[in-house]
Image (tube, rainbow, N blue to C red; front, side, top):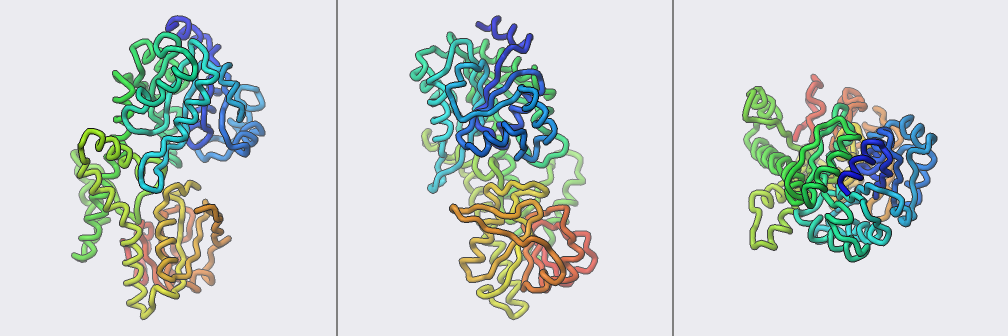
Length: 437
C-alpha cells in the first residue's frame, strides 16, 4: 500500500479532500490544487460551498485570483455531499474545535466529520486531522470511529495521522505554503506517506515525529507558550500601572537582549482560534491523569480577566473627567482579535463591549476591517466612517485593536479622552488626552 500511494503522490494522481473550508481548510485546499492535485472541499455550510464553486474568496490569506483560476480550471470544487469522500485518496480534517459554555473541549465537529468520512472511506486512503485538539484524539477518538464505520483496519487498509495547522491570519511572511509542518501518524509507513504528501505541496520543512500524540502535544505547547508569556506581561502591566511604570517601555528595553528573551506585549485579552482555547484542552486532559497544570491555569485566569481590568481602567479615566461609566458614550476602536484582519473569533474587544454595556455605558464601535459582527445570534453594526466630528461625540475612545489604517492623529486631536490598550498611539506627540494600558 505504501509504495502504491507514494507512486500516486509522485505522479499527482492523488485526489485530495479537505473537510472544513474555514481559515485553515480553504488555504490548504488552494495550495493542494495549485500543486497539481485535484481537490474537493467539503463543508456543511451551503454559503461557503457556493462561494468556492463561484471562485469567490472569503479568507484573507487566500489570493482572490488564485482561487478563481483553480476553480475555473477544475482543480478545486466544493460540496456538502460527503459521499464524494469515496473518490478521494487524501483527507484533511480542518474543522473547528471550540470550547463549550463550561470551558470544556467541544470536539463534536471532529467526531461528526469522522463519522461522515467513515461511511465512504475506501482502502488506500490517507486521513489526517489538522484541527487543534488534546493529545490522544487521533488514536482514541478518530481511529475507532473510522474503523467501526468503514470496516477497514488502520495501518492495513488506510493510514491515519495528525498534522497540526499553523495559520497566522494577516502574517505577511508565513502562509500555509511556506510554514514548516509537523506530522505524527500511526506507524512508520503512515508517517512516511503523509509527510510525502505534504512535501509534494508545501515549501516549508516537514518534520516527522513518532506518534500523533507527540504532534498533538506539540501544537498545544506552541500556543500555551504564548498564553503563559502573554499572561506574564499582562500581570506585570497591572503592577507597572500601580507603580507608575510603562510596561511597554520595559518590554522594548528587555528585547534589546540578543538571547534568552522574546518580546510579548500586554493587551485587553486574548483572541483568535488557538491561543485562548488550547490551554483549556490540555488542562482538561491533564485531569484525566490527576494532574493540575497550575502555571497554565494561572496564566489563563490573568488573561481572561483583562477585559474586565480594561473596563475598570476606563471607568477611572471617566471618573477623572467627572463622568460615570453608567450613561457615558464610549467608542471602541477595533473588534478584530488582531491588527489588519477581519477575524473577530474570541476577540477580547467583544468581551470589553459586553462588560461596558452591562455597566450601563452607551457603546459604539468602529473597525475598518469588521463592519459588523455576530454574537449570540445577533448582528452588531459598527460606524460606517470615522471623523473628527464623530469622535468628539464620545466621552471616551478605547483602542482595542491596533489596526494600521486608522488616522490616530485625527483621533487624538478630537477625542476627549483615549484609553489605548495596544500602545498604537506611541508615536503621537501630544499625549495630554491619552492613557496607555
